[in-house]
Each structure stands twice: as C-alpha cells, then as structure tokens.
Amino acid sequence: MAASWSPESWRSKPIVQVPDYPDAAALASVEEKLATFPPLVFYNEVARLREKLAETAAGRGFMFQGGDCAESFKEHGPDNISSYFRVFLQSALVMTFAGGLPIVKIGRIAGQFAKPRSSSVEKQDGVELPSYRGDIINGAEFTAEARIPDPQRMLQAYRQSAATLNFLRAFLQGGYASLENVHRWALGFLNGKPIEAKYDELADEIERTREILKAMGVDERNTRPLQTTDFYTSHEALLLPYEQALTRRDGLMESGHVFATSAHFLWVGDRTRQPDHAHIEYLRGIYNPIGLKCGPSLEPDGLMRLIDLLDPANEPGRLTLIGRFGSDKIEKHLPKLMRAVKREGRNVIWMCDPMHGNTITASTGEKTRPLGRVRDEIERFFDIAQAEGVHPGGVHLEMTGQNVTECTGGAAKIVDTDLSQRYETLCDPRLNAEQSLEIAFMVAERLKGLRAARTAPLAATASA
Ligand code: PEP
Ligand code: CO
Image (cartoon, rainbow, N blue to C red):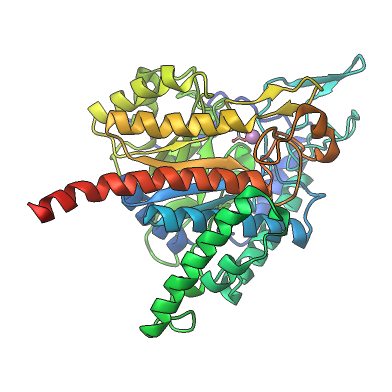
C-alpha cells in the first residue's frame, strides 16, 4: 500500500538536482506568495488533455511535444514566441495531414525553466563555480554571485510563464492558429531549400481540402477545429518548491482532484526518477497527465516499479514513457522495456525523445546533435514499436523557431565550423526551424506508413 500523499509529502524524501537555498526565510516567503497567485491552467483543460491522451494510448492519436531546452528571462520577446509557435504548428500540421490521426500538441514552453545538470560545478579557465540550473534558480553568467540560487527568480518565472501563456492563448483565440493561416505562413527560412517544395505540395493539398469543405458549407467561421486548435503546456517538474506552491485542489469544477497548475503536463527527468525520492513522490499524487523520461540505465523491473507508483490504477492517458536512449542504444534498451510493459498490460503511451541520447561534443568544442542521429533514433523507435506490436505514440523535440546553428546536418548541411555562427542556447542544442520541419516530414512519412497498416486489414475485409 502506498503511503498517504499530500502536495508536500515529497519533503520527507531524499532529493537530488534541487539546490539548497542559502536564505530559507526568503524561500519560504516566496513560496507563500506563489501559493496565493492564480493558477496558470484550468482544471478542465487538464482533464481534457487526459482524455486526448487516453485516446492516444489506445492508438488513436499521436503526441507532438516540443520547444526550448530551457526558456530564459532574456529571450522573452514576441518574435521568439511567435516564431516558435509557427514552426511548432506547421510541424503539427504536416503530421496531421500525413497521419490521419489527431495530433496532441504540447509545448515545452510557459514554464520550462529549471534544468538538471550532469555536474554540480562548472570550470572555466581554472575557476570552479556552481553550475547554472536554469533562470528560475540562478543566473547563467559565470560569476559567483549569479550562481547563488535566488528564490525571487521563481516569481519572475511565474510572471513570464503567465505572459507567454497569455500571448499563446491570444494567438489561438484570435485566429492566428486557424488552418487557413497556418498553411499559408510564408516560410522565408526555407527559400529555395528542398524542403520548401515538399511544404508547398502539402499546402496545395490543404487548400484543396479547404475548398471541398467550403463547398459543403464548412469553413473557419462556423467550424471550431478549422478556426483554432488545442495547445497544451509542459515542463520538467524539477523545482518542487515552485510546483508545490502552484498545486491546488479543484473546487471550481468540484472534481476534488489535486493538480499542478503550473502547466497541463509535467514530466520527471532521467536524473530524478529514483522511485523512493522526492520527484516521484510529488508526481504520483497530482491529477495531471505525466511523463517519465526513460534512459539507458532503466531496466524493466525498475520501470515496472515506477509505473506502479505513478499509475497504480492503470489509467490510459495518465502516463507517457519518453524514451531517450541514443540512436546507438535504443535497439539494446527499448524492446525489453516495451515487452515488459506490454506483458503487464499497462496502458501507457510510448514516446520518442531523439534529442537527449544523441548529444556529442563537436570538433570545435560545442555541444551538438547530428540530425542524422536524431532521425535514426526516430526511425528505430517506429521500427521497434511496430515489431513489438506497440503504438508509437509521439515524438519529443528540443526546437526553436529561430534560425540557430546548434545541431549539425540537415538539408542546410550545417557542419562543426558553422556552429559558432548562431549558437544561442543556454543549455542543450536545439533544432532550428528548418531542421524541425525536416523531422516533422520524416515523422509524417512514418505516420503515413502506420495509416496504411491500419487500413490494410479493413480493405482486405471489405473486398473479401
Ligand atoms: C530535458 O528534457 O531537457 C532533459 C534534461 O531530459 P533528460 O531528463 O531526459 O536528460
Ligand atoms: Co534538454
């Protein structure tokens, strides 16, 4: 029997990756303040996302989760948010049209600030300082002062999240995300590149579909799914004092469920998923749909134990397993995990994060991710799922709408010596706009294959 849970029961467990704040009173006062602030998301939205994910778990949907590795206080301009949103929605549209499946759209945005680090210290020119842990915790500048964890940063992160979410909601409400608009967006960054022709072809197909629908009396003015779309937010639930302060019991809809109001979907990272530690304790009690990062060190027994803790009632849509093995390791690790989960009849969603297992150091010194490896891990993910008779339920990308040079390869053939041109990430290397669309097109191809496999037996029955 699991012990009783409360929003603060994580406090009696061991915890890693969350800093010690030097001023406990200052921390407590920020937590108190946050606890009085309005929630960022509404209970019904969370419940609706759970329903959509339950459909996805049953093979009738596909999750697309993507955004920054780490949001920052500096980069909070409208262009940054709108360019991300455009590329994200366009990528989702590519997948929707190819796959014939509802795409559940979840951004890594409006709260993705806290970062786990592989080392607690960083060295530069013989000087050692505590690592940067994301703008919600400390500053990225390499000075002793900036690296001191400051609880006031949580208030700024909350306010930035609220403003970002407001901007996104305005886009959704105001028609910016309508089918008509999304498929017409000029893709300046694709000018003359091979992927532009592919996108134009898709845009023509969408235009034809719209014309047929219009002739039938269905258009953006009278049909909500053409007018806007559902979009959800997510981040890693790392900084538990912040998460706890925004954890509330739903009274407005009288469900009585306790849920995190910092985002719709929260996940636990590969470094903080110890079953007897604080992060799993916190996540097991909230009503939100949650994700669990699964890396190469996770064995089937360990995974089953975590599933029992996080989803004891085996509720479809509750738990998404986010594999992040690396293109060279996925073959060794994913099949045995998928088999164990299937054998036990657990209703989870399997998703592929092709980013975090494929980070290497370029010959020029930057952290990078070769696009070939990213593609390769996705291809293998689909192959393995198909071979195991499991629904490949989603992809998880670190991406930006900006034209950065952080990942090598792709149609633009970015090489190591190009990386320094626009290397802007505060943390992990992200796909730029063009690379994100390239990945969306390859995912779309695989979804097309799935669709063909889904309809083949039907066609056979029909003609029999
Ligand atoms: C991340 O998603 O940014 C991350 C740190 O992932 P992981 O926990 O899988 O390393
Ligand atoms: Co990352």
